[in-house]
Image (cartoon, rainbow, N blue to C red; front, side):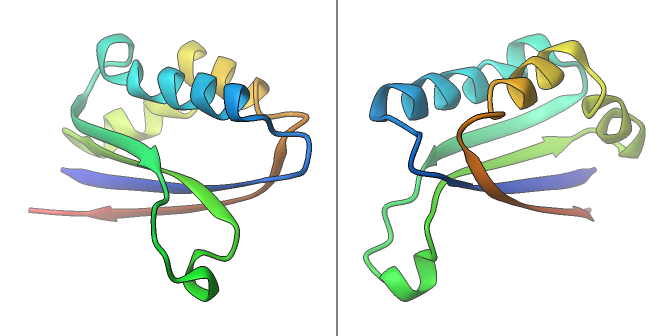
Length: 100
């Protein structure tokens, strides 16, 4: 299995409504993208501002194998999500690693 973690930092164009819309899209990935074993997504609630560093939304996806992880990026549902970030994203951190 493979773990895929993503952390989103938004610019000043983001609204609470847009953030909620993005979270809803992320939470629907499991139903629409094959190979997902587990998925969780949510807003960053840490009270340690120096650690938060402006990252307000996180995603964790567990894939059955590396092949499904590789198919995830170009999947139309994922690409639609990526396009919806165009005017609101400042930075994204992605970490992928194998798990047993």
